[in-house]
Image 1 (cartoon, rainbow, N blue to C red):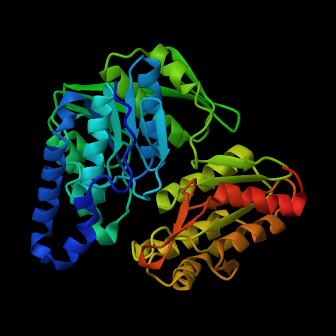
Image 2 (cartoon, helix red, strand yellow):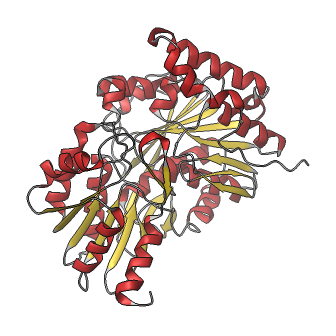
Image 3 (cartoon, rainbow, N blue to C red):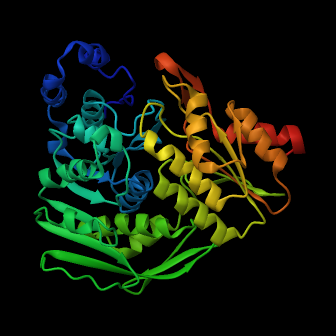
Amino acid sequence: MKDYNLPTTSSHSLSEWAPKIKKIVPSQLLSFYHFILAFLGALIYRFPSKKIKVIGVTGTNGKTTVVEMVTRILEEAGYKVASLSSIKFKIGGKELINVLRMTMPGRFFIQRFLRQAVDSNCQYAVLEVTSEGIKQYRQKFIDFNTTIFTNLSPEHIEAHGNFENYKITKGKLFKENKNIHIINLDDNNTSYFLEFPAKKKYGYTINNQKKETNNKKLFIIHCVLLAADQNRLSFEIQKTKFNLKLFGKFNVYNALAAISFALSQEISLEICQNALEKITGIPGRMEKVISTPFKIFVDYAFTPNALEKIYCVLKENFKPKRIICVLGSCGGGRDKWKRPVLGSLAKKHCDEIIITNEDPYDEDPMEIIKQIAVGAGDKAKKILERRKAIKQALKLAKENDLIIITGKGCEPSICLAYGKKIPWDDRKVIKEEFQKIYGEI
């Protein structure tokens, strides 16, 4: 078998010209431009998705965790798997950190990735699919075997115009795939995603909530939640008990999405159980970095819905004396509406608030911080340099407090103006500053 290298940012020379081409192409032709790029990518790499089962995971939150869980289950079942997420690219046993800072890379990258997965004899490829990716036809000419819907809450509103357009864009993934749909039945937008026809539909729900549906093709997976605390996450499906080494009710939903997919592929609950119970954590997702004398977590959360869930789960599970948060606003120039909202959530749930730089891109980072502070109020501290913000949080913390640093998780860089990136890892910086103050970890 030929040994393939995982794709890099230079996966095809034409894709490198994309930003330059966009500047000279009239706006009314941009959609056609994106469509043609998608076709060319598939053509050059010989339509690889026709020879592998591709799973697309979409939704506002939980995509990365679901991709990881689906991958682990398939591997436990004996399949060779490729996966592409905001954290990493994986083909069989080979992994590469996603340094592109794109959840769903460009068309040539994805098609080359799928071609390498096929040539490496992978039977499945699991992909995160974003609304921006769908808007730019990055999902086109990919034959999806299964599409999974996790949840939906306001995000990318400025890019799509409004929430309804955002939802419709997500829906295109299900409209185009008429094979297998996996749907979160407890989301407020469930009915919209159930409208699209498919050969098989699987829905998942917690605590046997009654679901009214006239769709006879819908197979419902009922889950009974048994326990959710800092020590275990326990639930039961069809008398099979799952004990996960994760916490937070949202991770039950993530697991249910993966389990529902497994059942659609006739993979047993026992295999799902074995795979999921081996997972000790997802990088950058509710990841504990320091345990004592106080706890420090990092999380990728940068949407209001995700951030509030994180704060609530930490309160409920760990019952700290105080919560100290460090936050920014992911993606300068995008979704400015949510900045004061993020600040207000920090004010509602946290005892000490530090607002700092995150990924300003071409925008003034101090202006972003000020906009978040509008919602956070007078008790918020504004510290431009992220390392200094983390250091300040460490100095403020006392025994049995909890620090939560959000927005970046395990991302390997900070994005600045003119496309510049500087190496970064919240987890590494936390450990470095902790050692300076307290000695060995």
